Amino acid sequence: MPRLFLLLLATVVALWAALPVASPAQAQVADSYTLNSGDSVRIHVYGEEDLSFDQLLIGQNGRISYPFLGELTVIGKTASQLQAELIAGLKPDYLVDPRISVSVVKYRPFFVNGEVKKPGGVDFQPGLTLRKAISLAGGFTERANKKKALVISDADPGRKEQEVNLDYNVQPGDIITVQDTFF
Image (cartoon, rainbow, N blue to C red; front, side):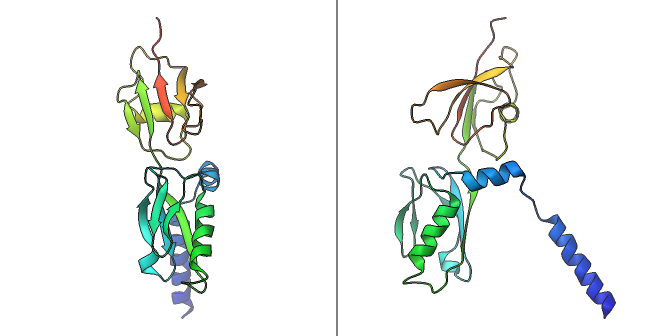
């Protein structure tokens, strides 16, 4: 009997150790990240399959359609804020003690153009620097400025270009332009 217990304990510890661990950068993005159109969220309501969704795309209008609650505006909210809104909406009339988790499963893309080998949209991943983003876009062309680039941040309402170095932390929706050099 003790041998079976030890074997079971070792299996549980091994499975627990194999779980993915979020880096501090990923955890920070997840805590402060505000949802926008093009993002996809996972909503899981424990014990309620009909209210759980593996991937809900946030529409261009910044809304999702959710059973019993209708159209919810989620743009500008964090996953935690959406979770609290769902709990508050379902608790009084539909569920006694709703247990809900909300997470971002796919971030909206960012865009790289200019002097890169494969310009276009790239799926965002937390912790990306400009240097890594350019690698995902196929790397620099021969004429590229390899020290800095121009970025229009999706979070900037004025949509102004700003010059950044290769250590810039890329955000979803950013538009990155790698310029050429003169020599």
